Image 1 (cartoon, rainbow, N blue to C red):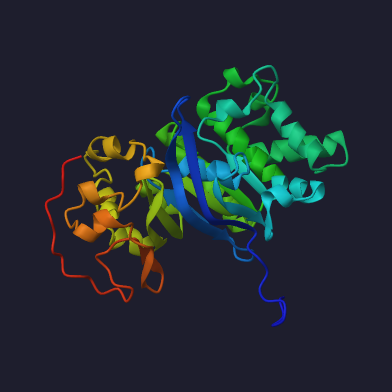
Image 2: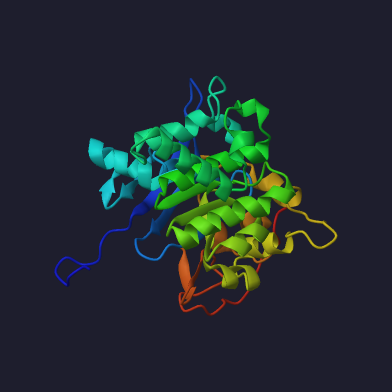
Length: 346
């Protein structure tokens, strides 16, 4: 427990105003903004599920790679227990690798095709000292496989290509269960598996959250599953946060015009949706760092005003558990008069 002198403990994992700009061009350098001025904190204590939602090109996977320390940000910093990742000692870096685990979209990329799937599980047991004997290690591995709906006798001893995509993904969830991390960065964990297996994988993640006290950063383009599994949500658009807050408020009463478009695009019972067609074509466009000013959504917004094109709207709190980056809202949450100009077609 913290004292008044020391203050509260730092977040377990924190992104502090991170920006990521990728460069291209040999003779003339051009920078493209993948993520801009994003902050996110995963605190100790009660485990939570935070969804990061957006279309292709919104910066979701870039954020995942930053949080995992795979790439360094070009601005801002990622902290573990209050220490920037580059400043971690060897011991703290090992702790970081155990506490912060990943489940990626394509599970095949997580396997070495020359090893049987046993290797990825046995390596985790050995690296983190999870068992004191081969028999104990085997028992841990088999128990983890059963927890994700796999039969050990039908899984162990096989090569990755001999398993289905859903089986490979569940092996990676089982690996995370073995390690018992404090945070899992799940980047589109069910987008490449059959619909029949999505519920099993998501339930395994929620069980880790509920039973093991593991927080989940659930990265997805699917608002429907984000609504089902998360408590809080960040809506990304072209590398910036459009709206953030309690998932019930954001999905059921969206305030940002972009969030409203996404919610309207959630598939109906007939399966019809504009997601990935009308919306996705614009989201995939790259943002030139030299000209990235104004609201990123201005060209598509039905409420666009001159100020929207002049400067980017700040993320403002509009409700106790909601923040929106939109000039339609004063800091006290009262909508501005909607004097609009016609939105240009994308």
